Amino acid sequence: MGGQACVLYGAAEFSRDVDLAIIASPANLSRLRNALAELKAEVIAVPPFEAKYLRKGHAVHFRCFASGGRGVRVDVMTKMRGVDSFPELWRRRVTLEAEDSTLYQLMSLPDLVKAKKTQRDKDWPMIRRLVEGNFFEHREKPTRQQLEFWFLELRTVELLIDLAAKHPSLCNRLAKRRELLAYAVSRDRSELTRGLSGEEDAEREADRRYWKPLMAELEKMRHARLRR
Amino acid sequence: MICAEELVGEEWAEWYSMTPMERWSESAKLWEVYLAMGGSLDPEPDTQSPFFDPEERSSRPVDGRPGLRVIRRGRIQP
Image (cartoon, each protein chain N blue to C red):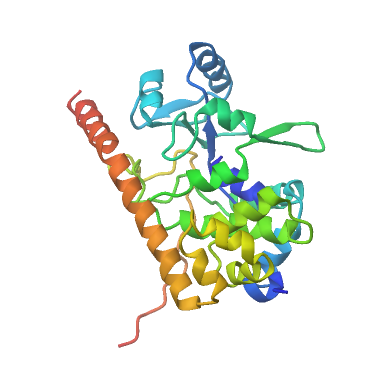
C-alpha cells in the first residue's frame, strides 16, 4: 500500500519508503520477523513490534541495514481507519507480475483510496490522481463497478460533470450516497468544488479524532523511552 | 470528451497511460538518479502525520548520505 502502490497505480512517480498491510497473527508476524531479519531491519521510534499495537491501529516503523536496501524505511500496519479487515483486503488484492516473475500484492484501488483519506495534505492530491488514472485507463469500456467507483470517489470536477452527462440515471441514484453528485448533473462547478472540499474536511477531522487516543499512547511511549 | 493532456498536462497524462510495470521500471530509474545525487532516505518531516516524532529526526541521514545541499540561495528582494 502507500507510496509504492501509488506508483504502480499511476498516482506517484517515486516513493522513498515501503508500506505494508499485514495480518497480525503469530505465524505471520514470525514470518515477517524472519524477512525483516534478512533485511537487517531494526525498529525505529515507537511502538515496539508487537501484535497488540498493530491490532490497535498503530504503525510499526523499521529501517533496513542490509546492503542493497540500506536505509530504506518499512512501515507495517494491520488496521487502518475506514478500511476493511486484512482478510477482505487480501481477497480483493491486485496481483502484478514483473518480468522477473516477482509478484507484487497490491491493496485494491478502492481500498487504497479509502486508506489514503487521512488528515495529511499530501494524501488528497494522491487520491485525486489514483481515481483519475483509473478513469482514463478504463473510460472506453467501463464496467458497472468502475462507474460506481468513479462516481463515489472521483475528486476532479470536470470528470464528474463529464461522467454525469454520460450516465445521468446512475449519477442520480448514487447521489443518495454522495450528495455532491447532484451538482455534477446540474454542472454546478462551484457547488461541486465546495462539496469536494467539505468531504475532504470531514475525512480529515474524522482522521484526527481517530488518531487522538493513538497519538496520546505514542506520546506516553516516547516519554517512557526518554526516561529510560 | 475530456482529454487527459488538457486536464492534467502532458507529463501526468503520459504517466497515466503507462502500465503498472512500466511505471515501476521508470520509478526505479528515478530512484537510481535520486540516490546518485545523494538523496537521503530519511522521510521528509511530516508534521501532519500522526507518526511524526520531532525527537526522532537525526542530524545525519542513517544511510550515511550527506543529502542534497544548497549550493546557491537566492536573496529575497525587499
